[in-house]
Length: 138
Image: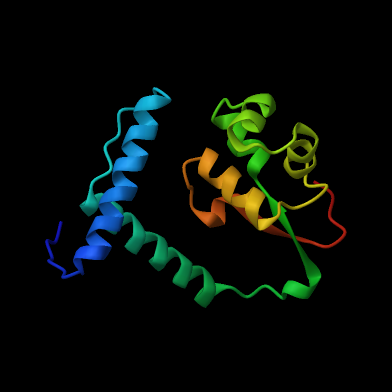
């Protein structure tokens, strides 16, 4: 592993520390896996996510007009063992809306997306959504 050093403002460092502390406390509260997010691991993950995003954009050859946006939330929440009622309690989103989103009858608003994304502990955005050719049934 290559070690590098970076400079950042005190304000940015405080923001990253706050985010790390928030996630660590949230993990403890929900008795999830014992993972500790450090400033270093946060920055490594942010760089990796940016590289994945750049790679997806550069290598994308989809003609988006023939594709519709779908989400993977149903599978992701099932894998996380989070029920729709628990999800509704955590996010404040009505169960009927959650059902519509999880079955891809509708896509989430930005507000709902961020609440669902947080409930999943902020996975890679490319795991949340995919494009499907128009007229293809799941």
